[in-house]
Image 1 (cartoon, rainbow, N blue to C red):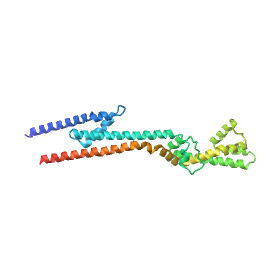
Image 2 (cartoon, one colour):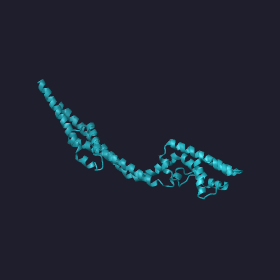
Image 3 (cartoon, helix red, strand yellow):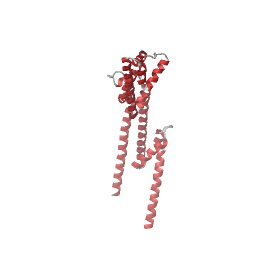
Image 4 (cartoon, helix red, strand yellow):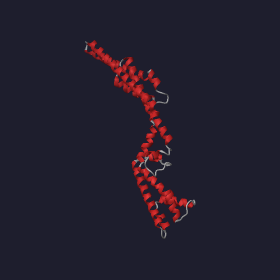
Length: 267
């Protein structure tokens, strides 16, 4: 009898293992699985999700199996919602990247910011360390420009050469290009005009843009969200959440009823 019982137990175990393998394999090819995974999507990723849910809930019978597969499809659709949300936000950000009003709107009461800045992408993607370095350089550039301006205002012998020499190298090279293009004359008056009209406003703007980078970034990302464009996606996500809750509740109720029936049959 003992030998028979052992063999019988082994036989039952083998049957159970075979049943589990067949059951999971069958679910991978269920009707919902075939319909929910689109040709361009990763079927193996969905299969892994479904296997994980099957392992978690251990369904018995076609109805419970169907409900677990339904849970997997809801997870999969919610994944699409997040992808669609990200794509919508990215497209909006792309469309406003050259919006000249964003920088001004980020600090509406501040003066000296240019609505024609072409550095918006750099401001959005720069790290905090990069922005600190950029701010420090901009402050040095502005200070050198103001020092050159003071020298020219004071005047005297070699005022032009002295003022030019105190400029930062980039600003000095920029000035030399203007002179070469004959937009300004290489004189004290010409350099003073260049500083007043072009260099000092640019340096002031660079300092403020670097200092207000967090506000500019927040303004840009905020405008990129445009919640009204996400409203339909949000409603669909709420629908999926409710569907998930109902499906899970139904599955748990069926398992509870099955367990009660099993207990009653054992009495």
